[in-house]
Length: 115
Length: 107
Image 1 (cartoon, each protein chain N blue to C red):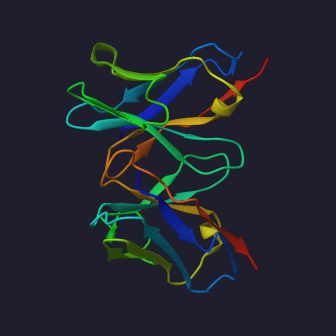
Image 2: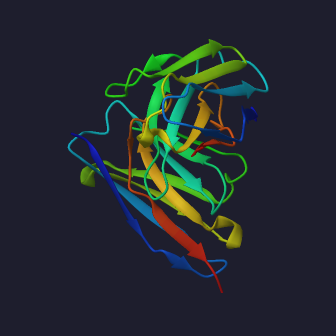
């Protein structure tokens, strides 16, 4: 049974870099896409971007200049970096497996940006 | 970006009621449409993909329909565990946008 477990810093100051990692347990990266999604407090879900097991990426244009998603196949994990964060980046961040259907999700991580 | 518009934004219903949620895309997404159930403090859960295919393990009271720009999620007989927020998501073109959500509340 595939499980995703995510971790990373929860409290950041403006202009810092948000870094989250999602470990994949009980399954392999192939042949899937791996996705990051976030939900700001009191708002809906926002698609951040995805990475294919082969390494190609797609990003939300609204975040593209500040976001990097990467794979670490040797450790069965993938990561999200969001640079130059502001209060608007405060959200619960989720990792997930899939593209047209997100079948497995991490538990969610609250990242708060505050001075 | 493709805009996804859900209606209603919230609905009050009783156990046993039939509930219908609609999702409209600003341009055609074909059948590349999924529905998710989201409860507070938990990760979203996939219900329907490819507009009408029920995900394994999801109760058959959930069903989806539609093609192109207009889609529907139906809960045939609402159960206590179904009170949650429901989101549609298009996977036709990047960015894969979500609808604003429909909150299903207890009447």
